[in-house]
Amino acid sequence: MRSPFGSRAGSASLPWLGFAPGIVLFGLFALLPALAVVGYSFTDISAVPNLPWRWIGLENYRRFFLSGEAATNRSVIVRTIVFCFSVTVIQNAIALAVAIVLNRRMVGGTFVRAVVFMPVVLGVTVIGLTWSLFFNPTGGPGASLWGLFGMDSAFFGDSRLAFPLIIFVQIWSSLGYSMIIFLAGLQAIPPDYYEQAAIDGANAWQRFRHVTNPMIAPAMTANVLIAIIGSLQTYQLVYVLTGDRPTTSVLALKVFTYAFGHADQGYASAISMVQFVIVAVIALTALAILRRRETQL
Amino acid sequence: MRRLPIVVVLVLVYLFPLLYLVNTALKTPEQYFRDPIGLVDEFSLRNFADAWEQGGFSAYVANSVVYTFVCATLGTLLSVFIAFPIARGYIAGARWWMTVFVLSLFLPNALTAQFQLILNLGLYDTRLGYMLLMIGNVGVGPLLIVSYLRGIPRELDEAAGADGCGYFRYVVRFVIPLARPVLATVFILQAIGIWNDIIIATIYLADPDQQPISRGLFAFYGQYSDQGTLLAAATLIVALPLILVYAALQRVFVAGAISGAFKS
Image 1: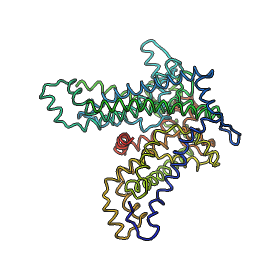
Image 2: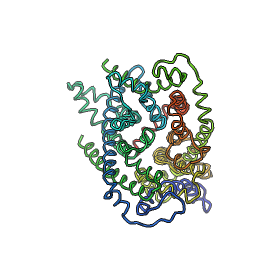
Image 3: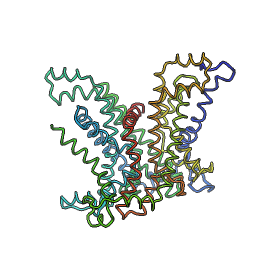
Image 4: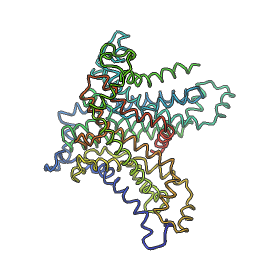
């Protein structure tokens, strides 16, 4: 389509002129690097400037899957997937329950909604420090809470408890986001559907199953996919709360650690690619299941 | 009223950690040492002043304000100029560009290749390099704007064109004002990301004078990890502007979250 602005020669290129700066920045700093990672994964390039590098074929992948590091790497992959599934399932279950509770008119409902959504705005550093202080082993409220049950713990310093706590903080941070999306889905359901169901004698569970559940299927699809992709890619919270430790590290944090802690950027690129494939497989499988579910409901 | 206990627990789980932070930040170190979780007895703002001073927060805040405003403004502006010709088909391959923006949300983590690029451009440890990365990371912005602009009738373009209005004047004088709601959303999504960034700043900005506030807070945490009252005050210094802006513009934030979810 020709733009209707100006009839002079060259005026047809004006839309391109406006388009170019943004697309160049986006292409150069976001799109191309994401594609170039594939190439770097076949090299031994480092983070040190001007150091010579070579093509080493599949060596980085062999190192990841078959060398002495393989067992550690497998446990990191398992932990990443555990993180993804726990966050996706628990977060969406609670978010849906909270959205249903808050969907009805109530005094202070807007305030409660705003409070639950707030961590989405706060950012990982503030959230990480807040919970570190809360779970300060010497005298934080978390320690007092544990004390009520006669227990004590080093919390983020405890090798068994640290990871479950990170999962908790992650869900705490992003629950509001899922909740808002479910609320938007719930508000789109016409009230007559519930009235009709009530006339037909449906109880609360039946109304949920036959009215709410099918009507919020698109919101469920969006929420589950966002949670899966987000939780497989996030590592900022782990970085702030515990750093890269054998008991808490996830795949995306390994990319960061190898790229900048060990300056081993070829290997880090290969881990990036492994992560990308895992995200793609899990997200596409989930998408297929969710789409089929949407059409069946 | 079976809902009440659920709501009360929810509010507690969300507000208690923040109230604990406020309570701690207002205590003297001696009181915190004696009774870490008791209510504050002598109310004092000393910790805020001390944290601000010792953490060098004025420089960090100034950096973050500049990074956030400049990058989010330019990022939003460039996104409009990307989105408008795509929405109208004024450039070839409009459909294809849409696909590129959608796919870009799912591509591999680009940290390593980005680093090599910045290194080779000589932009490592420069404000310019950091800001270019932040501006280029437009995310869902162009997609949100495209779908909004499709709701603005094309006849308006033709009428303005027939009256002799130029392309850039039209975008600035008509498209931008008409698209204000979606532009506010895009600006805020990008601004939150920049204000809260810690990873990119950690990687690219080695010089403390150039670092933004999240990085400053994290460094402060490393240095004063045993001083709860100072840490609480420092955390609130970083969180407070966000909470205030959020309280004032809650609607825009929530609208942003919803439109972002259904576009991606």
